[in-house]
Length: 88
Image (tube, rainbow, N blue to C red; front, side, top):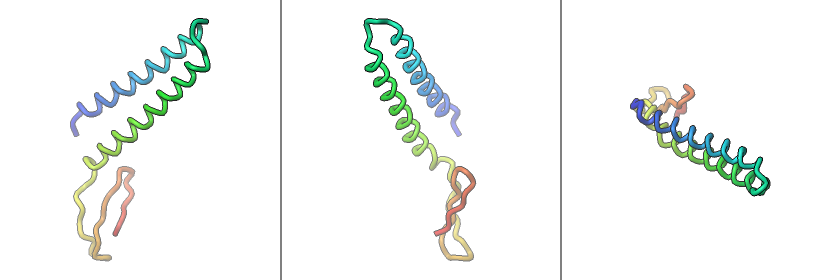
């Protein structure tokens, strides 16, 4: 697996963490509405989760082993990320 993919994923997560931390610091200044900053922080956390979900879904097929015919059921076996096996 190309380490470059993981480096970019790490950079994305670091950037998200920096944004949330910066919003938390801005809460200390009276010029900024804390409720609005909290809302923006929540939106960033949701964006982070959605981004990670999408990237994990895109990366997952790179880990799947080729499907092999199942001798017992005549179907195919796909090995998942967590070592789970699905036969269909």
